[in-house]
Amino acid sequence: MPGTDAPYRRYVALGDSQTEGLGDGDEATGLRGFADRLAEHLAHHNPGLSYANLAVRGRLAAQVHAEQLAPALSLRPDLATVVAGVNDLLRPRFDADHVAHHLEAMFAALTAQGARVATLTFPDPARITLLARPLAPRAVALNQRIREAAGRHGVTVAETSRHPVVADPRLWSTDRLHASPLGHQRIAAALAHALGLPGTDDAWTHPLPPPATPVLTGWRAAPAELRWTATFLGPWLTRRLRGRSSGDGHTAKRPDLGPVDARRPG
Image (tube, rainbow, N blue to C red; front, top):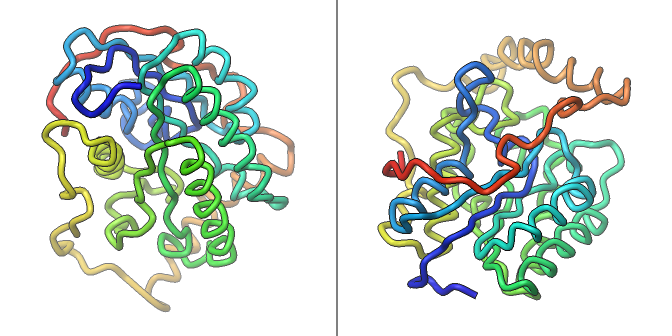
């Protein structure tokens, strides 16, 4: 398994919409996302790095396991990121043990093949939108199981859940489900720092400068909450009731290993 001083040659990302890059770019210009940003950082210090991104939006942890693990293993990565579980957390029937079982199976298979694996913990949804308060215990339970499973297989965990800055609205897109470009930048920096990559530090945990416009709270935020419900939460619930997923018809954006533009992180 590569150490922090060993070069990485093949990086493979597994996951759902966050790993695919939703919120960072668009369908016309292309999605970037934290995995692309991490790959760019890696390539800057590891010339010749090849990168594949197998993530597909809307996928549950079981689907990531069933659809992405075998292709990932066939690419023989020496570094892999596995980030999944938020889509499960949002479903009416959530079972933290079931989600963790699939995550751990991926951790076990990838590390057994010799890859270094990294993952992360998830922020409390109630800190991002008050309407998500009932989901807070689910996030706590899932994060604890991620830590336990990661510990059993030597998986690196970026503890993004523990820092107040992750709730800053500027790190989230307008749908409040996906990170903004700045949010994806911070996630990539968190993973790079946890992996001990060159040129990294804990700056990703630092708060942003005060916003130019004060953030509305309490009853003053009610109109914005209602707009969010009508624009994003309502359509999401409708898809669930119809048995549809945002990932229907989508496939991995980078199913094969390929070269990376080694731009500096940013």
